[in-house]
Structures are given as structure tokens and as C-alpha cells.
Amino acid sequence: MTPEDLASVLADVRRLRAGFAGTAPQPWTATTAAAEMSVQLGHLALCLLHRWGADATDLDDPQRPITNTGDELADVLLACLSAPTLADTEPTGLATPRPVGRDGEVERFLRLLIAVGQLAEAAMMHDGFRHLPTGTPPSIPAASASAVTAADTLADGLGLDLLAEFRAMVVDADAFLRARNATK
Image (cartoon, rainbow, N blue to C red; front, side, top):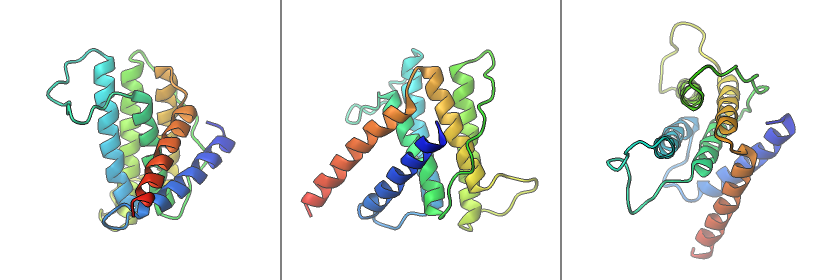
């Protein structure tokens, strides 16, 4: 993702966050966005299990099929950028993707999981829900940049265009918000 792409995506994230604010029972914080990252990462993991041929029938909800890997990865990206947006900051420059070892998709997913965990920890510290641990955990801007890079790297490994998937998700989200506002 180029810096220009990131700027465009952030503009959409800010607009969507403002629109979704009216749909939530309580105001969101960076920590709420971190919880949403966990939800969306779980949805993505379910899609990957299906992709890898695993039996996930015990995890599937027939009333809510979660099968679109690209859409779920776009939702992860939205959540990863919602955390800094809600903390009134932005990701630092995107990180350089690390070379991927022998495990391909699994390693890329695990790197995303770790980056999202670091972002969640940073958000929780920012909002006063977690103590400052020893060491030097990344800030929200640094952690969100790492998470975006990890999501983009996973998308590449899956043969997905993360920016196109994100734009498609934005179209769906805008339609949802228009329909919701029409019924009020």
C-alpha cells in the first residue's frame, strides 16, 4: 500500500467511523476498535480454515455465513485503522514487509495476529485499561502501521488486492449506513 493509498483509506475510515458512531449503543474508543480487530481477525481465521480445507463446521453459523476472505481482511484493515483514528492519531510510515519463510499463508496470518495484538495492547494502554508493561511496546501509530503492513502482506500471499477489497467493503458499508439512516 502506497502512502497515497493509505491517505485515501484513512479518509474512508474517518468517514465510516463517523457514520457508524450513530449505530453503536455506546461511543467507541481505540480499545473498542481493538476488540473489533479481534472479532474480524476471528472471521478471517474462519475463512482461512475453509480455504485450507479444515473442518470448521463447529465454528460456522448457518444463519451468518462468513466465507469471503477478502471482505474479512478488509474488515480487519478497517479495525486496524479505526484504533488510531479513535485515538486522534495516524499510523507512522508503513513498515517494510519482512521476507516470508517456508510457511507462507500461515506465517503471514500469524504475523498479522501478532501485529494486531500489539495494536490492541497499545490501544488498551492509551485508554487506561492496561498498565505499561516492561520493555518498549509500540505506540498506536507504530503498531497500526505494522498491522496494515501485515494485512497487506497476507493479502498478497492470498492473491488478494487489499485496496480493492477495502473499497468494495466501503461501498457495502455506505449502503448499510444509507439504509439505516433511511429507516430512522
